[in-house]
Length: 85
Image (cartoon, rainbow, N blue to C red; front, side, top):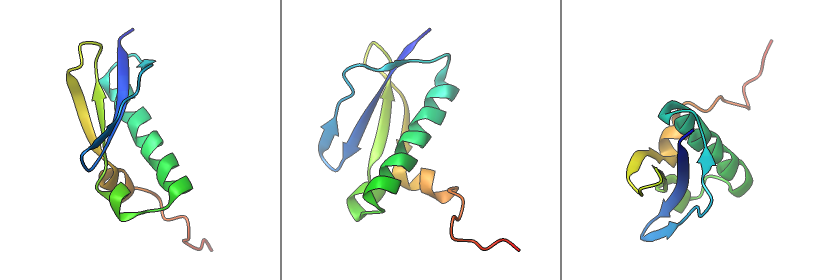
């Protein structure tokens, strides 16, 4: 299984994922990145710096496989305050 690394870019700062995760394909890496973003926003709140942050998913060679903006993950986040009748 390929290994993917989930590095977070906030402005000029890059927070490197030193361990990575073995996943079956880039689609699964996209799902993991989205879940990571949602968890960070839930715990830290929708701070302006986070809304401009990006998770850069790289392979073992360091090539960027995908870039996932935090703001994109929030666009399709379910509205948890909606009232159901």
